[in-house]
Amino acid sequence: MQSVTEIAASVRHGGSTSAAVEAALARIDALDSEIKAWVEVDREGALRAASEGAPAGPLAGVPVGIKDIFDVAGLPTRLGAGPYAHYNPDTDSAAVARLRAAGAIILGKTHTTAFAMQDPAPTRNPWNLDHTPGGSSSGSAAGVAAGMIPLALGSQTVGSTLRPAAYCGVVGFKPSHGRISAAGVFPLAPSFDHIGIFSRSVADTTLALSVLAGFDAADPYSIDRPVDDYVAAAANPNLRPRIGLATKFYHGVADDEVARHIDAVAERLAAAGARVTEVEMPASAQEITDLGQPLFRAETAAVRFRPYSRHKEEYPPIISRHIEAGLAVTAVDFIAARSAYQDLRRALTTILPGYDVLLFPASVGTAPLGLTSTGPPLFNAPASFTGLPAIALPSGLAANGLPLSVQLMAGPFAEAQLLSAAAWVENLLDFHAEPALGA
Image (tube, rainbow, N blue to C red; front, top):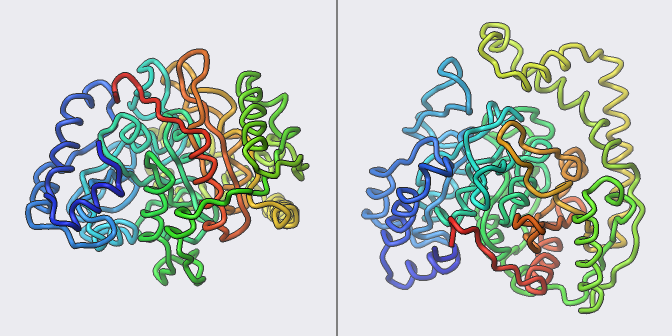
């Protein structure tokens, strides 16, 4: 499939607005019976929108998959759960509305884990169907990896964009908390919920962000802050980025192969001109994850308590455990966790001005075998629990043939800085492998 940038440029120069949609639908027909990335494909709606002619915007004619926690007018929002949780919105979520206004064609809804938590979706990893694609944005990551769509929306509360991107060998990006409106998106833990973007390149991700970013009064967590020229930033890669290598953060936690890979990537970046120096993280990966859990669980319980109390027996096990744990969090525990969380954010934002990005793995290992787990989010928690922007870039293949990935993280609202560095790293790594199903 063509890239986001190629499709939009073709349409703006008079090319067919239907070609990319038809190619995506053909790809879905050929592959999705095995991969199961889609919960619903709006074939008629997508073809009708394409035939009517997409607006000549930045995403003209680009087919997009939408994680099934976003409201899309005319399509049910199922939340990866049973019928008791389904509803039928008559308006688009803010992010979907911005995509449409930019000329994108909504192809349908991609599978999510139940309520965007860790109870697995039916989706399989295109690189090996016996392995998880990660979660909770399972279908979005797998759909992009398999070449069914060039662009998809997901979300991240702890690791739901960066981890599946790493497992599926695609680019996964989450901006600073509040940079993209979450209005019309099912909340899990609103203080930590981020909108995520999946694509095959930094350029495509940047183009999508340029459309999606901006203040929205309908989202109480949206930040009224000027939007930078992200496209220009990515088009002008930082040729000598200052990279903080968090070696002690991942050694002894990541699988040995992953740790060696990140070390080797850092050496390549330094040899190519990057200024790579060791950085000491303010806490271990496990400590950061544990730190955010009382806040995350308490918010999840607050959001879901009433429907959970009515349908308790129908809730899957993992989110049930988190809700029960959240209900047990005391006010004292919550305030203490909030204070510690603020200390962590201050510590990280004190470190970050000395670097353009920090470098560490996007996942502990490659995609785990089996479909009963979506994998641990240890290395995704720092960006999620502090609201900092981060990106996962495919960077190689492991001995088992599954993708490896690096993660870059930057300071608050430093998306332009992050994307400029990411564009340079992506170009240097030059990863173009595809899964057999996606070839």
